Image 1 (cartoon, one colour):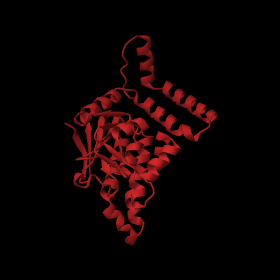
Image 2: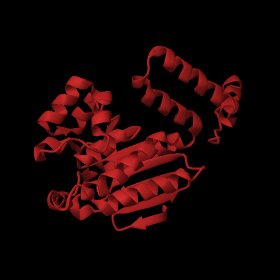
Image 3: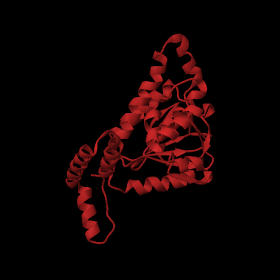
Length: 267
């Protein structure tokens, strides 16, 4: 069983060897994001960034769903108390998401039940997404007269293209897991009863991979749409040169030439 590293009423961080799991933990509220959860999320990601032996991060939700958006009861108070209350949720969330995308470790979102609003934004920020066949996706902001946060406006058009992103965001329709996979919102769809097992298998596959190379691959792909071809080619060259100095590159080449399985150490 995972050994807890950090526990908060709204969030649980657990480490099982080289795999860390962040669980959004307000099941009675369908894990609606409030100030406590946003702050705990940032604290958890900050803690993980200081673990050099970490190889994979999994995001999941407790109870009946991944996350049903922001805590509207708390957010409603911002109309009378001012925008600082919204910032108290949004700013730590945004800092955590930026840090997750910049870390070398692959981030997996394990999704089930409602994946709505900020929950969908968080899911799209992960590197890979595996969904139970009961998952339902809604970028619900327009339903409450709000604009998008949590990186959803950044990741959605990159995943599905601008025209489809506008449809998903403006109409705020609900799509099931199969349609989410067809659109490119998730990578894999599995039976609901197998989500934990299949997530563990995916995390285990990445755990034994070349972590620093994964990080450079993440950065190259995430930055590519902001560069022209010459700039991207130069970034590829620099990243490859950096890989040359790693133990994993030496091991990967030796294993390939020796016709054996590589034993990567993440360095």
